Length: 280
Image (cartoon, rainbow, N blue to C red):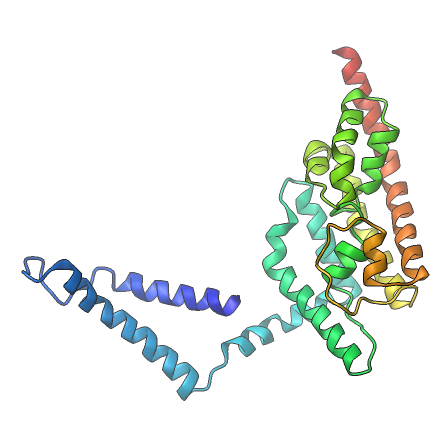
């Protein structure tokens, strides 16, 4: 993908640079389609020659160069610090109304590379070691109900809210949350709401740490096969990516911890909304 982007930028710059160049004068009698055809030959020729020199003569491998640039990032993401930072950043920007999908051009290649390395390691008779994968984050443990582990909040709104508005939102958001779609919940209650932004940030730090430690300590097996169906409800998806009782226990621990983090902030916010509804 990055190779295609770089090549596209290079081609665009060359074509733009020769956009006003022409072999012919403005009053030429040659038809426009003929002059355009001849004028485009020069930039196209330059592009082909540059590509030939870099690839066939200089033996420059752009893919390997890009891979070496991102290697430190990939290595950092597979540490507890990098893993926690990236997941916290996902929650932080989400709390401000920016979907974490904007990070996918960086995170998706790293996650796919991680699960590919796990597959190769297991095929070679070695254990899977890469934690920064989509299987761990979206299907196994970290983001139950969506980014920020919002399933507990959805259940609180549905079952415990005293305010009519939050109870109505809970009814509307519970089904999407079951399938790990939490945009209705987050944009309906969390975004730019100081009562609920803070627990989302806390989850962005605490949950990744618990997930990392649980996997590295062997409570659950690190996923060793590709599974991109993040919309399968928990704990079914957890069992698919790591079929063991320990995996379910780790998921349950994360759910309980997230519940404890959300609860006091939810109670305060619910009480505030009740007061606002009473005034109206």
